[in-house]
Image (tube, rainbow, N blue to C red):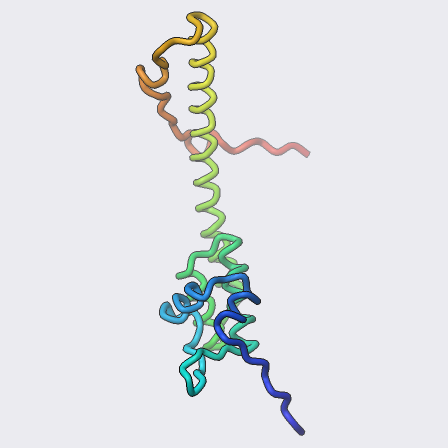
Length: 157
């Protein structure tokens, strides 16, 4: 049986194919996220389909919020044949917690911006366009993050 030759890519070709920059590919190599590629006699890096697939995985994992450390853990576990659904679920759960924390912070910040805008509207209504802004002079509304328990909404049927 004859094995079909594997398609190879130079760094620019692989960068274009994966939507990553050549600098990013070199960084991922240094960081151990992808293996050092074979090189031509002229020293050019040669990547294959496995590298392209791995880079696509890295890109997708980053897009859903995994850190490079998380991705490295998953890739190392995959090499050892030890990727378990529970491990992936744990990483997803951790990432979800961080997203929820960030959303709570953003909601609190949004409330403070609404209050600052209300103060501006009030000043404009009462005094016209002042040379000084009361929000700047008196200080912005500090945003206070509510405890997580008060942020949860009761779900109905």
